[in-house]
Amino acid sequence: MKILIENSTWNNVGDGWYQYSLYYLLKKIYPEANIVLGEGPVKRAFRITSEKQLNNALNLLDWQDADLHVFSGPMLKTLITDYGTAIKRIIEKGNNYAFISVSGTAVSPSQKKEIGAFLQKYPPLLFSTRDEETYNNFREFVPNAYNGICTAFLVDKTIPLDTFKLDKPFFVSSFYMENEPNFKVTGDFSIENLQVEHRKNKFGLPFKFARHLNYSLPQQEEIGGRKIVRLIQNLNTKFNHINFAMPNSFISFNPITYLEVIKSAEFVVSDRVHACATSLACGHPARFLFETPRAGIFDRLGFDYKANNGIMYPNMEIIEEEMDKLCSVISKYI
Image (tube, rainbow, N blue to C red; front, side, top):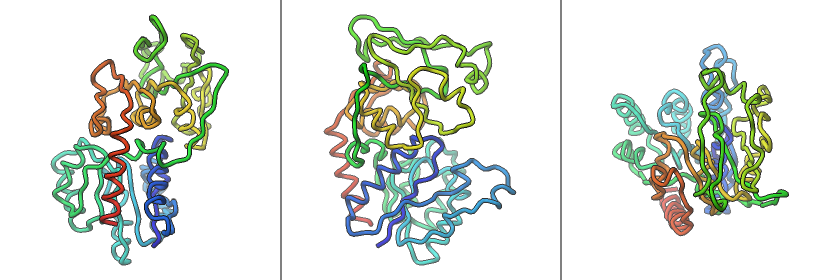
């Protein structure tokens, strides 16, 4: 059996974490299968809006062939436009597809109806979600629905990760919706005693413009004897004045190395869902500082990011239990 795992549609490197984790998970479940990494829709990966550019792109997804295609991520809102043609071709060839660790939150009633009708006409072998809202939205439309988890929570169990030490202990900071806050510590250093002071954008500009001026702001290299390591999760070489605006900035085209940074850190402070999820996966606390429907991945595992100033502590027993359940469901339907 040939299984093709989508692993290309990264809006940031965090998407690669749950897609690589899913790849390694399926290799563990099906050691005799030919499991390969494949392409997702070019339109989703590169956010193409021009019809001409889309026509010029070689959408390799349309040409890849496997007994089973596995798709993941927050892709249900654009299921028909981005994946519809490919899924129809998969079914027409007599092959199958599955959704594992997928999300479709904040959909309108009309979107739910349209997406549901497509799923009923072209049902996946398995429809495993990563948040309960998505499960409740679409379980009525598919034969094999499972209230699953985000595979980002499994990275330290599925992917071989190394660790390292810097000259000082460190924690990770990763922000993309606002300027990185100022950090202060009261008492002994801990995630509980780390104070966060949000910064205003320079000149009152919208953040998408103000971020280009971050290099001119005062920057902290460390606090409380700990280095601050900044993960730059948007991969680009165009804006190096943003990438390297602050000390200890880390950017790489290797998504696994990011996970090793997170595993080697004491904790993560971030407004990014998957930076915090992978910290918990590696047995470290995380402090999540944002409000988004995608944070439902925390609710699903009982992590309350709305309490205690966003601080969450790992629960490896729950993660182990949910991994076993997911493996059993995958084995049952695939």
